[in-house]
Length: 467
Image 1 (cartoon, rainbow, N blue to C red):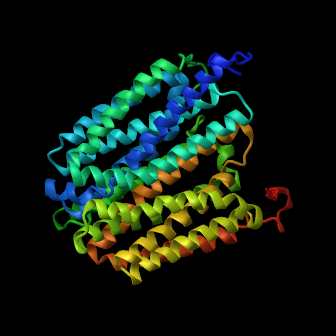
Image 2: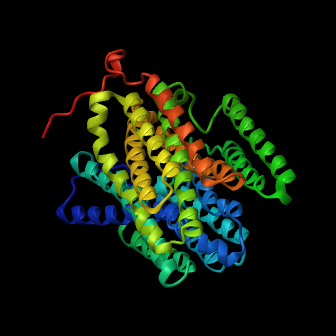
Image 3: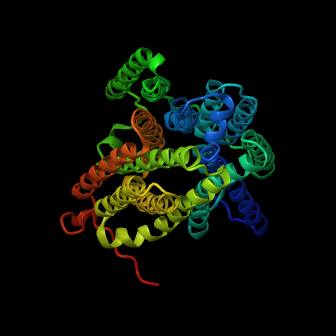
């Protein structure tokens, strides 16, 4: 195996046991960070009721996490290279715990949104560094493939658990218990990491951190999301217009800086890879459409249909369960259709499922629509990630960062934009807007021909042998 200092040696039985423990702990980091995305969804109506917040203001509670998670992912991995990945993960868990205390004690929506933003920043720092540690402490070959599969499974399980855990805690105790649970999980993980993961060595030589690009990226996302949210409130409409404009300017500044910088946040060779561009496209629209639809459905179920947080959680958990099913089916679908058509099919399923929300906004219809959305995002995400990470070896880390960033920012922007539509009109109109976006993205993805086996033999997706 390769140790954290980069030395190659034979792994003993005791070290195999230690590696297994390390994998479990590091997958736990992934579990907690992904849990943080979904655990507040079913608790959101109670949060807003207790803190006197509107549905528009509540958008920030959900999107703040994704904004900072996506905006800081790329720069966080480089910080890990400079300071040491183990040290960064431990620092991130400490920040996550502090932010959770702030959330548990929140007395306003803005204080709650600030806590979520800090949690998102902590998740951005811990996820890439934990994955880097996992691929370092585990030897190459089947063992590492199983470890990476476990990492993916931890994320999928956390996504499915978040709806249920948030609903149960809110129903039985209080929504504040969600944040107290985060504190306990962060403390347990920090202790486990100190006991199982050896120290790694920082390497500041040749590692440049693109702080300016990252700040412009997150400033752009924050401006667009916060500004769009303010547009839903009459008293904040003028300020919302200004903030949105500033966000768009920051986004433009990010693009210009990346083009001119000698050391861009995203390597230029990565942007020139067509598969990565379309993979990021699929990742963005998959989360933008499904996250926004589920948030609108959560508010609708509890505010309009009168469901308790627990019943809403049990209904929406079908989304995450079918996402796991879609992820399992996706490799065979990609083998048959290729990347672009598979991604188009996944986005098409999302569009069809969202249409069910609009035409059948009752308990059974919403459950069916959530399940279809989960199936669609499972297929789309696997196809997009497979497409986007088929790059040269030295670009794989950058590609993974780009894909994850696109997914998180897609969730933030989608929830903000569709939340504004739902506030200004009604949920059915918002869902129909999502249908239009998902259908358009499906057509564009399918027409891209990336990975089309007939037209591009060089990128042919090999058929997998039948079991």
